[in-house]
Length: 68
Image (tube, rainbow, N blue to C red):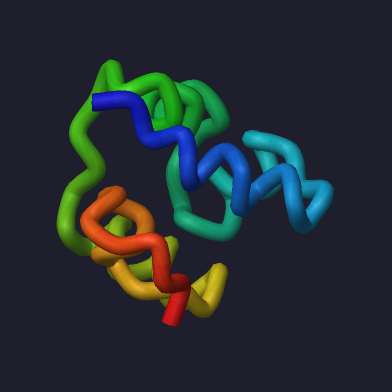
């Protein structure tokens, strides 16, 4: 599964993958792997992403188009 929405959310805020990795306490490489779907996003990171971007986890996972 490719997590296009986390890339879109990151780019909407003009953040780099390295900056997102820092915010999530992971490396830029690991964050890149999340975006590309190489690694599944662990629940803890998924929750941090949702809180960081102020969206629901369902939005990130593509289960809904409503951000809140």
